Image (cartoon, rainbow, N blue to C red; front, side):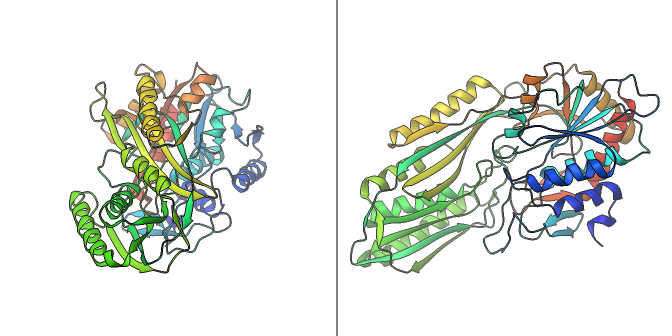
Length: 482
């Protein structure tokens, strides 16, 4: 059995096609070409803007001509993460899908159901002639995952609809009517090295097996940050054993909790045994701290080949100060919506790039002033450690509208289909809806989708049974919209 045999076959068949089209963030040319060819094949009107967003239009079915146009929106890019032992080229290779005990996952990589399943559902509406619906505008945006570039630069006149259904949520049975805003904060340190001292042994400390996950949806789950773990072990080695850092490499994506990190240190030969013993002991203590949230954490320490240079002492001190002092995780919970994370920050990646050490973080909050304060907290920690700090432009949150007619229609549709009320929530992750609202303030919006877990990591998986419920809800909302 392949995913094309799953129900609803039209949606799964389209998703299967999409998994075969490479679509890394900022390199969406191939999926854009696929969408244009799809529109031409099915004789649908389409429009492209300068940044690469695409709208495909379909007219209203009989009896729905006088109703407001509905926008179905999904983003075309995907997070490209793989296990370290997986050989895979995200620019050219097709995702390998696997059906596994009620879920669909990929073989060692992200699945791309975020937001490939949303694309598939929108395309299915465009070509299923059995459906009843108002006029449809299917909007496919680029580069949602690494900067919301498509939503920021949405071309003039791309949308005429009154209602927008965002197809980028990850919990079936929940309807989202608000989201956090966000901003990235990057810190730069000069990568100053000096000749490696004599009489030193070299060790690689590798952190792996962490769950990682989405830096919005999963930030409250108490998961470990691989960069923090590696920094703690490196700091102890420097303090107790005069160790020198050779390299530090952890995490990859700004919107993923880092799962892996490695730091190479040089230790005086006479301190080698003590260093290994102390590092193992600290590693066991850290694993005990996360015993309930990171059961598969692995901290491996292995001797490696000698290196020619190490970080200069001042550069090493500043790097460790930056990594240990910058906050990561939940900063505040919402008082307005119990159980919702209000404000958070994520220490996403640490890279040695040419002559700089680049540290990437991201802050999120559903309260704009709290987002700015979180940004200031992170900046202050970095400046105190001697870093140059740069912020991205950021993006706004989406303020909930609990009185929306579209929300009421969605709730009634869910109840009529499944006999229960859906949960109405805001989400700590960022959605493009806030940016759409800036350009089209008349829009009423909701967001819903099937159940996804482990997004932004190779553990990403899509629950099969919820895809059919997601599709049924979308069809019913379009049929009953007023």
